[in-house]
Length: 325
Image: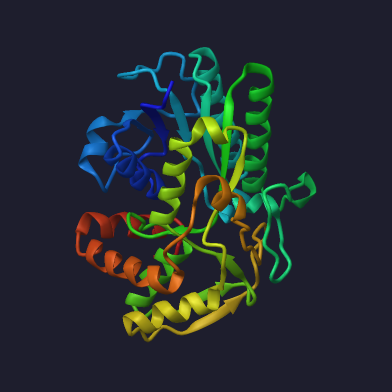
């Protein structure tokens, strides 16, 4: 039986919004599920099933039975989960509740959005392959929540026949993001001529443009029965220094911001480049947008979006909660 109906958690987020839009354009029936309302797409908003995934889904009412679940919902800020480890517990609990729903409703296709954080620290120039993970590499409660969720998913495969695909993402950026992630945060500061602090002088990470990320998910959905059981890195396959990222943003917007360095924060990693050869081989996944080309697209979208007061207030509130606004 081919995939026709998809339950998508985290549908109001950056990745969830674009994945929902792209799947719908390809003719799939998408059931968005989130605890939050969508800022970005009124069609997603109208169809969203609102549910707190920290609570069991036994009484969840959906318009159709899904053929496949894509689980994107998570508390995703590494530093936030260092400060509040209960958020990591929530991540694990959400995965457990969703797997239990899949088990009891006989839904055997499950795609999970994990993270490059599970690899831990990398050496300069090292491209991490999917099998290169170990519990001793875990640096933060966020990482533990993703690593533990992966383990739980494999257990449900062994015991209950749920067929998983695990996707490890790395610094997805682009439109529909006015959060406190590094790129929208740096843009927020740059357009206001505020100084930018890079936490970790040598920090170098793999940034993935949103359209490349969504294309990867779409390819997995279309090939699910052929690639079930696999784990894929979906990233650009090239690392960029955060100091260079900050300079690119400052230069592009003509900012007077000064760039400084702070110590790397507890739980964060300094280096990661994804080895995407398996995704190329089995999915035909080839990222098309480099940071050099994608960042201007992101900045132009941001500048246009911030003219909408509702969007501006959303980011200001996000940052004010942390004392960063």
